[in-house]
Length: 309
Ligand SMILES: Nc1ncnc2c1ncn2[C@@H]1O[C@H](COP(=O)(O)OP(=O)(O)OP(=O)(O)O)[C@@H](O)[C@H]1O
Ligand SMILES: [Mg+2]
Image 1 (cartoon, rainbow, N blue to C red):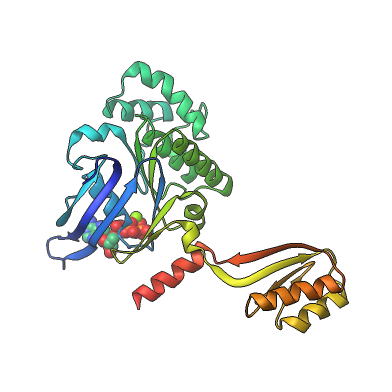
Image 2 (cartoon, rainbow, N blue to C red):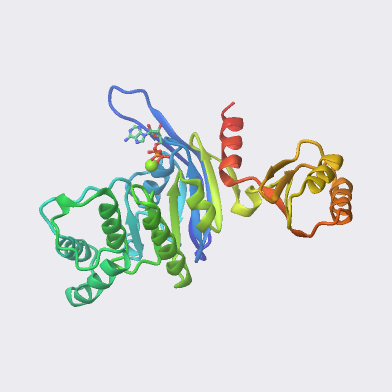
């Protein structure tokens, strides 16, 4: 196994065994690699096994089969723990504390010295959008809890950050702030392992994606590879006059107009070119022609419904 990789797993299997219960298989033969310095997205429906996989990588669980390496070490090797940050899913905060006290406590547990914490904590609170926050944690909204959880995960300036649904409970602006933060952390050389079922989030920030379905890796790739061309084109013209509409209808049937833009699905490239010629002959100015790509969401739904069948 390579020390150059941030995460590497080989044939990981996890079966939960609890007394009086039927064994529950959460992961089967999961092999994946995460390079350093990337934002990696683990995508899957509820119950797909995302949290289980992260817990195995953090040595919070022991796999029933297979091996894992995190920053080149066994997850149970304590040397690398200090180089890792973790935002758990639905993090519980102690209600009677305030942000600064809580971060001090967590930082000390993480082995960060007090003087460093004194400097780092106000900067982190600023970074996650909770500057000078004085409320008791019991009065925090869901989004504030999530922001504080993120600050907590960054206390030890980790090389590798595990975030389990980091934008859960955040409003659109908060999500954007978290995405920007992740991108700036990557620019600083950190590796981010992101669990999410929010496809738009993953599409916007991840360099690589693994799709997990019922505990198995079903697809790996980049968001761009997953977002394939649908065969449709969106053409924007300077003016959608009757003559222009008639010209389009004469070449490709079923065109849909919206203001000055038309969505067409030509049979082939020759038909698309014929359409362009007809428009130019009207005459009308063509402003843009764009191929339409399916979103990661459409791809994901195809994959999980197909793989589940
Ligand atoms: N402690 C446990 N005991 C028994 N089964 C468990 C336990 N934790 C998880 N599971 C089962 O393992 C499977 C994977 O769960 P996991 O929490 O890893 O999914 P997830 O992808 O993180 O889902 P979500 O998107 O809902 O967070 C599920 O079928 C779940 O019921
Ligand atoms: Mg989960």
